[in-house]
Image (tube, rainbow, N blue to C red; front, side, top):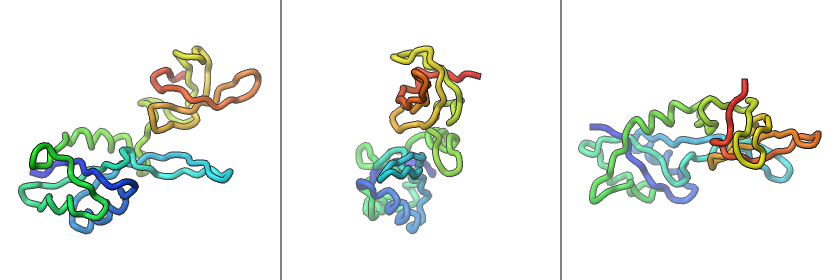
Length: 165
């Protein structure tokens, strides 16, 4: 029976592993998110792996040569418990895919999007209103907060926010 399995990849080798696994006929899913990167006074949006060093492969270990995954370029190994690869719930993969927008997983908390007005509920900026500018990779967001007549970019934990209509 076919199921999803977790594959550990070599550092920064996710794309290479995807390419080689697909060439072997495996169904591969590498969830990505959009990240803004600043370098040399330029800002660009790039796609980064949601789980660096890990991806998902769908296979049937009874019918497919799952050991071939371990020997694939860019792959360290399948995540195993004992001698066999351990499947994960397909609901996990489907929940991640459900949050995808245009090929990238949205990291914004459910119900929040870039440009939304939010109120800070806890912390140093409690009760301040702000605009959601960017979602970071560690359950934090950047807000544009107006302080002393100017807009300031601050980093806040997502659980400290609520959307304002």
